[in-house]
Length: 306
Image 1 (cartoon, rainbow, N blue to C red):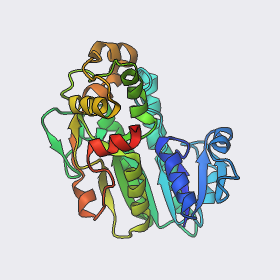
Image 2 (spheres, rainbow, N blue to C red; image 1 turned 30 degrees about the vertical axis):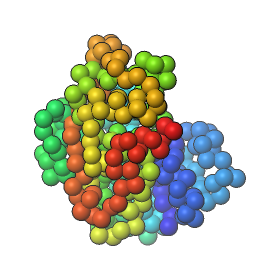
Image 3 (cartoon, rainbow, N blue to C red; image 1 turned 120 degrees about the vertical axis):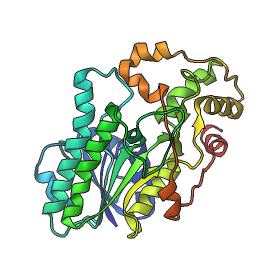
């Protein structure tokens, strides 16, 4: 295949690119920062890869390069939980996803030959947060800021169907691997200061990075896959269980909680991503025949941390 990717230098994107390279596919990377992309993907190690500069959310000559690609994977978006949510920051988070997806769809609609599939990221933030409810792909959307972002993001992706292109939307849970959210949690445990964040009762719907890459590949190659799929493992856990499992795997104590106010002081409203969760089940993902390499948390954390 020839696959175009946005967000390729990110945590999931870089792992996906490596996998596509290993399997002999051709890769077209759209990047805002081509210098960084060349560092992450040196040409000796990635001979099948081409890097093209683009500005997400802005039409341009880059859109023509999508012609002849078999599939497009759209992973681009501003980080959600790394800065305080000022009004400007919230607008950036929304625009990077909504306008970025809009321009990808615009490109797919106008090129010839067209890609056959768009795999578009979304997030389980779509469902809002709850300590008691269980969500699957048929559950209604929430009403908070992140739910609104996901609704507008997905609405732009849906328009690709007007061009007769197959659409798969993957609602990402928290991706576990060397880096990402887990990378930030490991340090306190190494310093014997690990523990649950906030109340510890919030749900943590997660997926191992290898599984999410496999799911993206299945979405690209399996013509019968269409619509919304939760990219989460079948066994979500509460934050206390995540902490105690990390402690067991790393042979460290896991009793020292991180108080909510400390996160709120750093992230303001953005702390909601960590302090409030949702129990999300991948009902359609399992029905599609997807086989998880790491369906349970102990196996996933053992692979990553040992």
